[in-house]
Length: 140
Image (tube, rainbow, N blue to C red; front, side, top):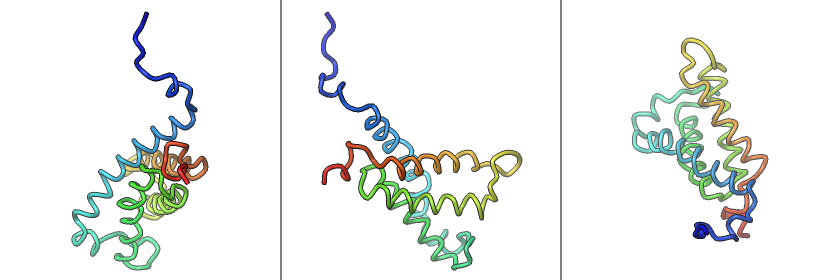
């Protein structure tokens, strides 16, 4: 007989909720570690020269992006205000892809196109599906 590795209660959980948990733990963590921390650590250098795709100024554009990458990503990981954080992040990512990267996906200069589409897919999924039951949002 095999020893019990996982409790039976864990095995009866919804695979959708486990999938949403895995999605929330991996992709937003990656985006936060690569882009959120970069914006926090290099705040002064980046804020002065940040792209201004909507012509609202580099600092407001940077503020919007830093909220998306450094605030919303940890919220998504924890499942706090998930749909609002996903919406904010989706808007930020779509603006970056449309106005900064010009919808590039293939060819020269498309170094971020595929990754942006993956990030857009993840935050859109969390916007539509919500965080699942393994989140702070589900505890209310």
